[in-house]
Length: 271
Image (cartoon, rainbow, N blue to C red; front, side, top):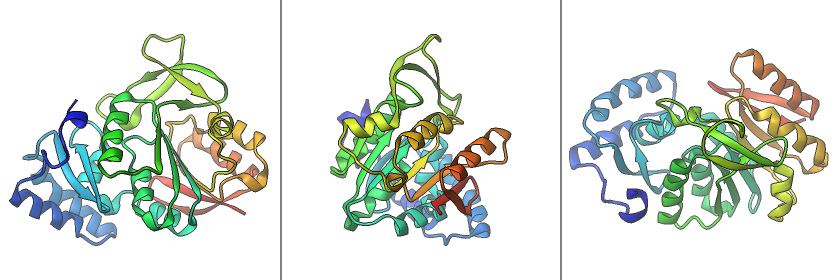
């Protein structure tokens, strides 16, 4: 795979494309500017290759321009990618604390938190997809992000194995299903088990996006963790779907309140 055997810079854009991309990155955040940038990126999407080396948040990243919406957003308009959620997390987390990125995908949240180098955070990124892990691992190595630890496991209600079902056309829609299905098996463990095995007594902030499996991870974790050791802030997807009401109720029962509802996510803080 090119992520492993070609140094960063081999897939840099040409001079014209780089200037055009820099213009897209410089667009101010805001609803109207988001729409404008969305249209501005289209000519560039038609001419760049499948892999591209770009600088985002001061990090040298290699990303794919097709097949994963998160990577496309990082390439063309990173300032708009969950802008409010990222800012709130940055303001909340303190020096030396622990951040979990559960359902990391290509690692946008992990990379953002790693870019806040003055805070010396411990970052744990969980992603079961091997291809996404290879790309994130390459970016971790290229930027020497020694505080960002990539874990190719799934989290859930119990220990065992599951099968990963990949999303069609968008890696962000990957899901894990019962190990009785056919496919590649990966380890699944409880979050509290992982934290104990890795000597992490407390998590301070968390982002979780696991395609509807959030309750399977959070419910046993909340039950098995002292209230004083629970994260102060949790970012999770809370679209207006019926299945998400159970997640909101779980968070509220566990002492969280909705601080901000964003385009896709809710930012919850402990009351």
